[in-house]
Length: 173
Image (cartoon, rainbow, N blue to C red; front, side, top):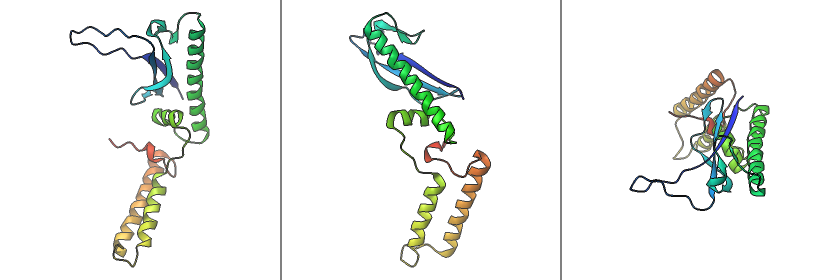
């Protein structure tokens, strides 16, 4: 699996006359994550702030020998290493790493997300509890819901090759 973490400082917005505003002070360094040629939907902040005059876009680092440049470069290398570590961890857990899953884990930590079939089963359990009440479903309706669950499981097994997938892996386009 290939992973690429690119950094950039966003250019300021243009004025009405078409010229760029001159950035004053430090600006946030943003990241663009790509996994196997698939890019994350949007850039996200690295948490590193830097004077744009010190940034070298081609080399992806702060240039100069100042203490500030060294600290920034070390932090950016550490961020890239953290992303690679997350990728390797997801591979070892038999997950299919995506730019969004790596980004989410880096930003929010490793919070387990619910699985699709698991959520479907919880909903079926809820519907079963309603049996015999006003809000209960007819027997034939419940049979159709269980058939839908089986169909979903078969689809995930056939198309993805796993028993279940995280809800975040769904891509509805």
